[in-house]
Image 1: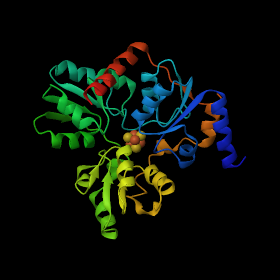
Image 2: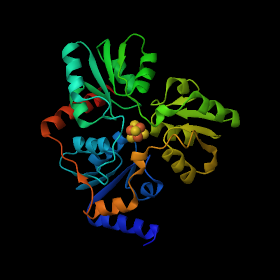
Image 3: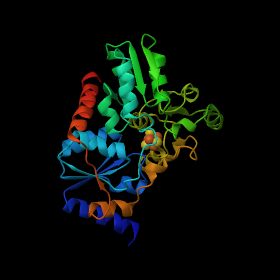
Length: 305
Ligand code: SF4
């Protein structure tokens, strides 16, 4: 079977089985092509809720499939490759958060959405990379523990000096590899380009940015800018923009070697096909008490954000 025949078969089988295929923007381009919806992780979980499909195939990593299940408990949510995980999402244990809270009752625990359902259940509020600043600012607490990403946390901390923000020492192993030399060298090659970067990157890289934002915001910014844009996030974004937009060569990848998330790329078209026809993948199950607690943190995020 050719790749195109396989793609057609996946779309047909998904339709026949009332199955929605969600794909995070960092997925392989072939998977982006056959997805019903693509985007950031939280956007995808909201879309799944809106679309009310019987089944969802979540092409991404485990915490994303869990987020879909938190918002849509009645839906069968399948993670095609059960080993696909976000290395940042588990860099602090729920037990450690519980211990911290008992020792620091006046400190609000803020969890980036890139965390497990078990961590979301322990925190006071979740944030996305685009809502983090607004939500931390709106919290009545002066003392904040920001988990797990120290880079996003430090970006928020720098802009809110009135808050006492404690950073956890977690990070995204993909974005955290970037250095200021990566951007300086590329800017020297393309002095007319603007630079858009994800806040999971180290501060020394953010300092060179014309725009700092979540994946969807970077895409929006890059599309609206007429000239060259250097993009500092997982290479799926440039792969997408360079093939779906006019003058695609104006989107320049910052460090293509570093900015690849192996867990995001592990899922193949064959995996998706097998998941759609029920031969592969893990159906995500969450303890109802834990799900309700995690949902509260997400609802608080929506209320404040
Ligand atoms: S790019 Fe980073 S934050 Fe995103 S899934 Fe991969 S490891 Fe996790």
